[in-house]
Image (cartoon, rainbow, N blue to C red; front, side, top):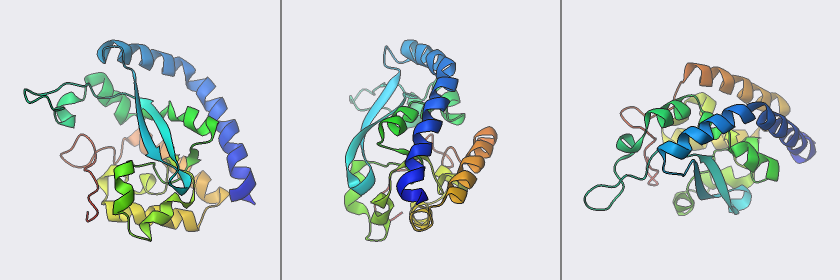
Length: 201
């Protein structure tokens, strides 16, 4: 009942109200990043959603497009701006994803939408993370986020898929608020962002 009918209704109501509440912050961050990132405040990327259906995710752009002498993008840590680092640390970069929730591509709670390139690397059990809509936050995020291994993240994702309930979603949202205030697990140790999944890590 909750999974099939109530969850989507709550997503729509909460995401819409939250976007309205955070709209002043949304506008301020957009303007700041507009100047810092040469007119590109947003980051768009295709990601697999429920049943691996591809959709376009939107986030605030926390890194510049600076390249080295070889024409390739510099490492993440060198492209992360001061404002971008703050936006990421406080999870403000996730605010635009409320729009993804409103249009129905995402849920407030669910496995995080990862790269399309990872689809062919998943094991059969890991692929079950795509049986539900991806979320802005999830069971893996409140249990370590980027500080835990990929293997552990997928275990948490599948555990969520098998145990979706209003109580679990509420618990995850409450834990997320606490984690954001504490800035826990934002980055992998010694990395500005988490390392890429290669099928083995």
